[in-house]
Amino acid sequence: MAKLKHSEDIILAPILTEETWEKMTENKYSFRVALGTNKIEIKKAVEELFKVKVEKVWTANRKGKPRRERLNQLQGRKSRWRKAIVKLASGDKIDIMGG
Image 1 (tube, helix red, strand yellow):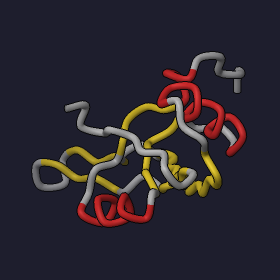
Image 2 (cartoon, helix red, strand yellow):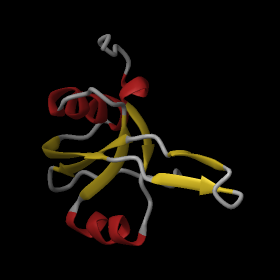
Image 3 (cartoon, helix red, strand yellow):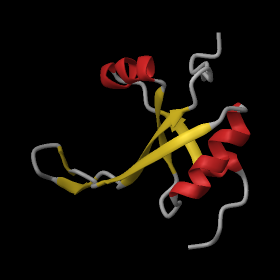
Image 4 (cartoon, helix red, strand yellow):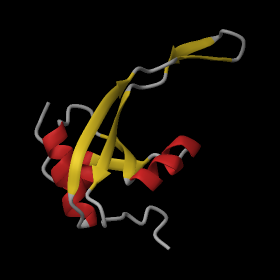
């Protein structure tokens, strides 16, 4: 896989669920990231995009689930994706909603 150069290519979107909102109180934020990126690239991208200090990064590869439509006529899979959870240094925050 080709090396990604821009932080916007690495961090694709924040993951906003009930569980991730609870983790924000512990200064942990979840993002959907590009496949093939490593923890060092993710750390640098978050620090560059949000101007914060990242202490730790956890990653997980999520498997695509089977998908069926119209009474078994169309079958396929949802695409696989990669999730990253980053812990920020105390005192740093990310304004996810931008408001």
